[in-house]
Length: 179
Image 1 (cartoon, rainbow, N blue to C red):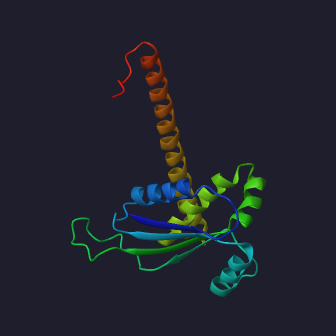
Image 2: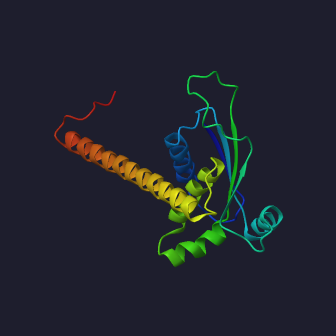
Image 3: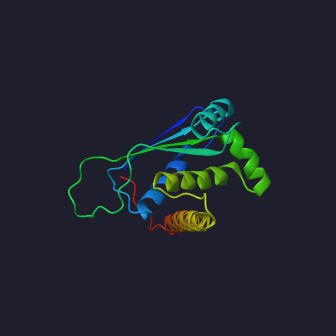
């Protein structure tokens, strides 16, 4: 899966976890590994322009999704591929998201991860215009985010345990020999 990220927001953010959470959500949703996604982080003014141009709403917003190809979830998994699917673009506005993060009582990184999953779901055809759609989309969003965080925490725990084991084995002379 090809995921490109570009930060033109002027806000320092860790791009790796944003790509990781997007990849995790796409994998969990059964999107082809040939799919392509672009994530852009932009400033308030360009986000306000996009928001007004495409949704006819004033001011900036936190995330917008721009699908390129209609995702065909009904296609059989064993059907021949017609090539990479261009899912589209997710546009994030860290400056706007920072205020939301503060109001929600968590950090900007957590907010950007949530917004990335939200954007992925929009690209896959989910919406929250109606109460039933909102419950389904936000429930799936929360599940994907929680599972990604749990998987990430387990991997970090495992890495810490391996490092502690390596230090201990090295102390007793059973570590890997240097060549």
